[in-house]
Length: 235
Image (cartoon, rainbow, N blue to C red):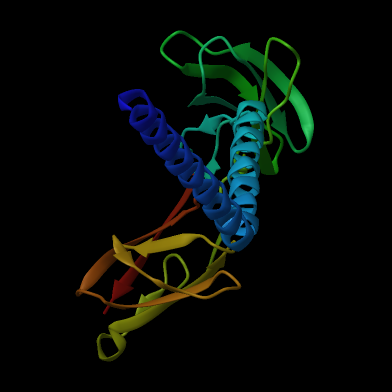
């Protein structure tokens, strides 16, 4: 009798477990039917995002940073200059002037490089550089710097007054006038004159009695100077 009751109890437990299992399977099937497509979409998006991240990393590895040139004066009166900058150490740097390869050097351990005795052409010189790696890969060009080489001093013509001219006391306030090259600054007795785009200039100067020395200086962006001195007398 006891065995019969035990067997019946075990059968009930087995049936209960089986019903729970069947219910669980049915629940899983319902969940997959309701949310399965969205789960698949999310999974595919996750895989794509991971793939895109790997692709971005590869592109970053392939990118070679161009060198950076140190600031330089816009104009110079020297035919030879020094050009320096910085990049990753041990890289080869090629220097270009007006589109032509000029020199090459190697970056030092402190990430600096320098080109000495760089010869310039008269007028504008477009300067840029690029990196060459050990496996012969090239970077893009650095930012372009333009340096103007001006070899000759500016012209300086004085139209008024003339050297040795005598001026009456009633007209002692005179306007010194003349002409020089474009983009040249002019001082008259160390005062800035008014200059125009065509190089003409003027400045009103008050003269003292007797002999006066007027010193006119024209200076261009490269530092070249031309100086004229004239003497006028006030009587």
